[in-house]
Image 1 (cartoon, rainbow, N blue to C red):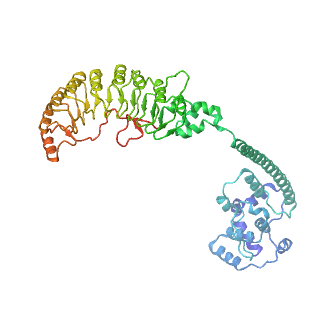
Image 2 (cartoon, rainbow, N blue to C red):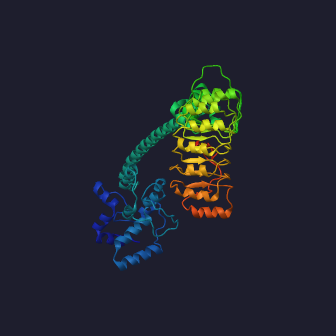
Amino acid sequence: MNAKNTEDDNQSSPARDIIESPRKRMRLENSARKSWSLMDRRTDTEVFQEMGVSLLDPDDGDSNCDAAAANNHKPNLKRKRDIENVNPNINSIIMSPRSKFSPKSPRGKLSPSPGPSRVKSPRSSEKLKPLQPSDQILETSLSNAYLIDEETPLAQSVSADFKGFNASFSSGKKRSNENSFSRHSIDDVRVQSSHSSASQDDVTTEGADTFSLLSDEVILGVMRWLPKRTLAHCMLVCKRWYRIACTETLWQRLDLGNKTLSKDALGRILNRKPVIVRFASSEIGEWHPTSTPIQSRIQYLDLSMCSIDHRTLEQLLTRCSGLRKLSLESVSLSQATHELIGHCSNLETLNLTMAQNVTDEGLSAILEGCIGLQSLNISWCNLNEATLNVLVEMLPQKLQRLNLSGARTLTDDMVAALVGRCPRLLELDLSDCSRLAVASLTALLSLSRLEHLALSRCYLLPPHALTKLSSMTALQYLEVWGMLPTASTNALRAALPAIQINQFKFSAISRPTVGTRRTSIWGLRTRD
């Protein structure tokens, strides 16, 4: 590369060089006197020696570039490449420490061998540079504006000013970073302190009574889901839990079947004021209180086959005058017990199946007081003829269901009197009444509302007499177990097509539990 060719190339298009070289345009506009620069039109050997450039001979790449420039008539492009190859300022920009932060620095690996530079021009790099923060844009613009040769006096003054500005700018930026770091540190300390305080609160509240923060209504809603045994344990925690656990709504249903109750335990159960209580097959301890009786809220009481003494049973019935349904199956009764049952004026259902010591005086006391009785089961009580007469004469007229099975002394006249006394019967069980004959069957035809009739093991009734029951339009079920062989039973079904025969072996009249439903009495749940 010689100076003459360079001077001719620059003379051919001086305006284009000014437009494409921002550094040259800045020098021409701001410099009043001529300063040295590689952009200048004159280049000689002394200048290169002062710059420390020892490679004065053009390399293969430069010769190729000169040939291409001569053929393609593009001297400006050739001149730009030559300047970039030998300009120490460009190399200093590339190798300077701040070049890694500058958006104009190349991203690729630099080649140590001399030759044509592969660094992109400032104009082309401006098109591809990404968005920058405001402080980085300011620093980059200042470095581009004042990046000139530091060997000239003007360059040295400008460089000194720029370095002072850069130092002040960097110190300010450092102070701002320190301030932001201090603010972040303070925030971190505050967050850590809050977390530590929260952890300390968790540790302190770990053993605290969190239930004390809840209202009684919320605790009551939680206790409503607990079983009765767990609820009894909760009563031992504190006075507040005892008071809440004694709420009447938590003890409305009690299933104490097949249990053994200790002495005076029955009194504590009544203090809970339950409504539905089941004591079936339980052994109840003695309870002989001396205080004034207080009426309980029990309305449904099942004492079937339980073991209880007369005095305890009397004390219990004294406090249960509001009973609606009562079962004393296989329980020994006293005269006082009969009278106490008669005091239950709201009694609707009474089950005395296989009850012991049932007398005509006691039965008369029960029927006189329980005028609203609708269902009565007095089967297999070994009633004599006098007791049966009292029963038939004093039965309530509103009675709808009656079970007299096993009444071996029941006669046809008593059946006729029974039909006249209780015309609203819906279900009647006269099974195992061995003295009944055709007259009794004829008397039963007047029960227009009768739906279920049981005549099992009434052997004096002839099979052909049963066909008379076809005149009873309301009758749906007929039980004749043990009376007819299979062929006769099929013939009876053909004669009575509207009536279902032998569908239920056992009667459900007034019984608290039927079939496999052992956790309910009279269709009401005994467990929550």
